[in-house]
Length: 355
Image 1 (cartoon, rainbow, N blue to C red):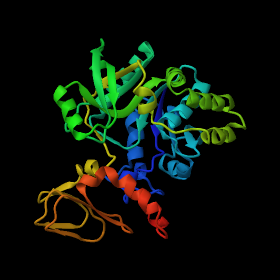
Image 2: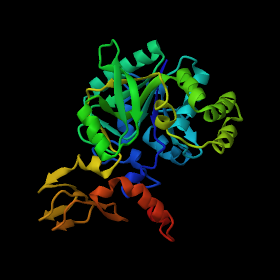
Image 3: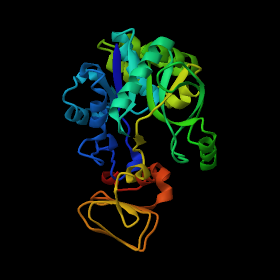
Image 4: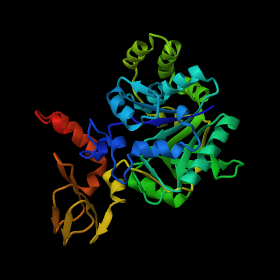
């Protein structure tokens, strides 16, 4: 049977201060009147019934998930005691689904994507499910790159396989190259952005985990033995203490020989940074703005206004964010460094309420 797993446990640090520890980006309504999480659920509902939609999140966000998604049963929300990267949360979800269905196929979707042409998106997912079933492969969705983006991973397309859509064996994964390498990838024309969407059978994924991440696999099997018993929750907490977190890209996708990629034809954006979010703001005198804003002799700025009037005069290449309690002003080129900034803020005294 087909199941959708929505990844909703991240803290969205790179969108601080809009995204905060108590209200991370998956719950934000910044592009339209839907949160990113709600939009993700609604996007997959036409092909996966709600009883087969699952969310994996940090236990700190359980109440917010219940409020945001009242149509899902509590047992459809998988809670992690702490964040240990994507290979771990997907592995936990895989053993839980496998326990109830030995033929479970997982459609793994991050909860912070913007997608247009949703009909084409769903057709692409159906194609990926077919490949995952027939070829017992690990399938991902690739996006044609439009700029030398250094915040995304890249996938090199290998041999094309017979299918209605543009589907290829994966030649290699490359994580977040520098700008010169990214430019070379675009010129070569055989590379796609890694969207972070994955489709595979749970048993196939766990076999690849056993091969490439044997220690993590061992902890997942310990959890598997207790799924559905009164010892499950305690076992999860005990095993999570033993786990060294790693992303599914680094841990498995860069190593497996069973990877396939479908080149998507729908419009996609990963709303992980202010540069990405800024593409959805209104244009104003050479700047992108929202809220109460007045820009004079200013250019190439992203301004995320709130209730207060923000005036930009004689400024260039800045990001300005007014979240009410916190105002952030930074060089646009520092977009990928906000995680470091937040970590530094956490070391300061008496500002916990602002993190």
